[in-house]
Image (cartoon, rainbow, N blue to C red; front, side, top):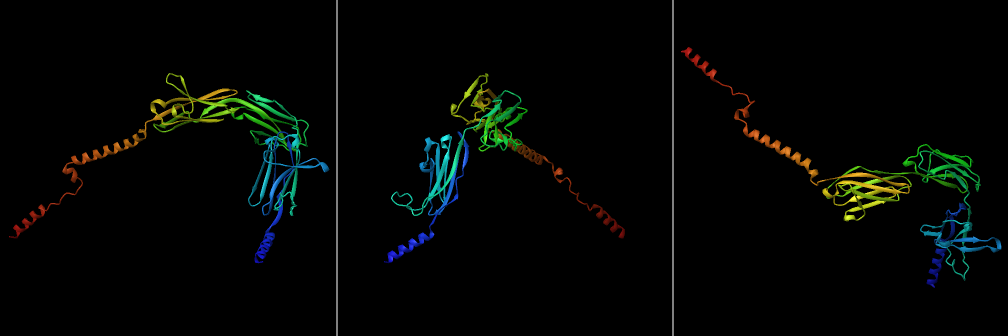
Length: 385
């Protein structure tokens, strides 16, 4: 009997502390372009923590059907994530959107213990929140020119045809960064951008963006000749230490390949690769390459090195002169100071030894003589007799 009372009390405490699930963040409807991606999120609270599921609504009215979504669905284009810490958080990400991805997506949650039992009706039903994803065909944007190459200046233009929604503004971007002063709040479907001087730093992907729902854009590539510059044209290192040389690449497109060579005394190049002679290490990124030489040797490693970059527009290179110093080179200034101190102390010691006694007493006051006083005393004594 006591056991039943205890169980009843615990059940009452559980019911008093438990709370039904509730949304604190619901998914939002979105309009996306064909080939883009969409992300829906929802957050739910409750005690105990509720379970979150995602469903896709197909059809309308009596023919409406629900299909549960899971990670890796739709040929691997769907990613479903969920975390359960202070509250339940879940998201669904759908990439490479197609027209068939348009529809209603539903986030549902429940913390009823019987929510997944097929033979029982849950006491606390699933709560639901829906959002629509509409996928549109990319409207045509006519660019002029389609590509810029080997030019010193250019006028870029974009013309948006058949927009999916009213144009609220436009702006230009370079390499996914908005260009200052290009944003406009007009409904113009034709915009321009002027490049007065095209150098190695001006190359890249220029994008015209029209503020519509959803935003539409098109890219114009501005290609510039490849340029390679050494970080330092003269490097130096100590024997047995590590030597490092760095080269940077500029222009668009960036280098697709980097190479290093050592110029031999007779002028012929010696190709260097990773692990060559077990002392070379090469690290590269699209715009940078670094050559490290282990255990520097004065005879073998001193000389000229060349870094070469290759892109679709050609090959560029730069040279670096490497000096290798002896490990004792840093001690010579210290040894010179020590030698000067020893010579100075020796000179002072010899000088002190050879000084005469007169030179030693030089500068002292002479002793006062009393001979005059004695003579005067004798004279006075004779007169008194």
